[in-house]
Amino acid sequence: MQMALIKLTLAYDGTRYSGWQVQPNGVSIQTLVQRALETILRHKIQLTGAGRTDAGVHAEGQTAHFSTDSPLPLSRLRLSVNALLPPDIRILEAIEVPQGFHARYSATGKIYHYHLALSPDPATRLYRTPLFGPLDLDALKAAARTLIGTHDFAAFANAAHKGTAAHDSIRTLRRLDVIEEKNGLRLEFEGTGFLYKMVRNLTGTLLEVGKGQRPPDSLPALIATRDRKQAGPTAPPQGLFLMQVLY
Image (cartoon, rainbow, N blue to C red; front, top):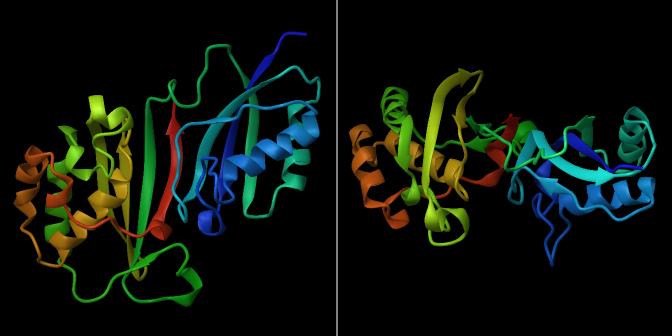
């Protein structure tokens, strides 16, 4: 029987996990999903994700792929695997895709949301980052506009000299919307791809602008430095959601 290539779309609450990717010292989402698949399909699985999310980061649209020769219907596979997974990890969809599809390399873009709370809220503390003190929203929005486009984002990469960033740190940020919510803000990032911790570092820098710690028109010069030390702090993980991988 020919191996079928299966694409999964997953959602998870990252609070309890060491991130998506398999880790030597910690429980990862990839490990649990792969283990559940192997139990149901009764053969080894190599699960490949569209990208890693860090500890504490959430997803509503992570994707991954694997190959199998099992005749098990995909609707039953999804239900069976979800029954073995903890309730904070769900497979939303399982579909067969053409050979040659790759969860990471076939992607044309990603959408992330970062949620900020204007005042502490115990009910959302694991999914929103609280803001303290006044925030100049107009300045933050003006700074956000200067980031849209194709730039060398090395200044916002925590590992600018490792992995893909080492030989190509140029990315295209198609959209960066600042949306006011009840008692909070949502930053929506859409781009062709993102460097390691790039969204959280952009968020931390934008918050410095909103707090009056750097002028909104200073970000193009910051980008030109390619120096991570010149950018703002890394925003906490709990406000970040991977919403969708685009194909």
